[in-house]
Length: 230
Image 1 (cartoon, rainbow, N blue to C red):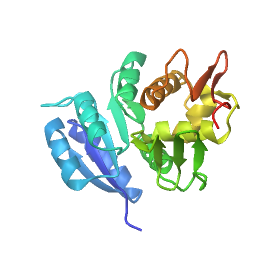
Image 2 (tube, rainbow, N blue to C red):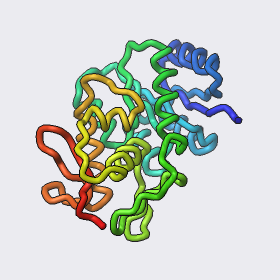
Image 3 (tube, helix red, strand yellow):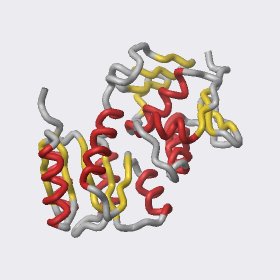
Image 4 (cartoon, rainbow, N blue to C red):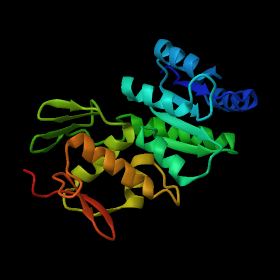
């Protein structure tokens, strides 16, 4: 089996050096860039399996790079930042980042997060049967969602949350349970990120926030998938 290819984008050479060393020791192939525009060129040419992306970059900042990557593909993105404000993390998640790591960090944590995001981006942990709910079809083998025969472009986290909810219509899931489904492991204090993912999911499914068809709010608990859809 070919090793996963990881693109590390950070203008701090020492961080790139350390992260590269730990990833390569763990069996990954590593590409590196310290410039946002160059990173996009490498991304398009090399087609990595995952991108580790710093927010503060020369020529093109990390948020713009992430937006472009998300417009062009569903490749998982883990953002690195020295900013600790929750609003900054939520902005990254809203534009399609799959995870967030705040500097300073342990290189072992980066490797663990990479493995988790890659695992949840694959299909091995998903049930093999297609989930149907009216015009909505969730195919875990192809990792695709269709609505009225139109492909819905979801991030890996969004796909895993929707699959978890739709597999058990009517069951109320807490935000922490959905965070676990999305990320493979729970991170205390990040429960609000689920609200961002749900907001994005509803938008992509055409759900009205105040009167959704598919993903319903269970006040005081979390969310559930509607039982009314046949």
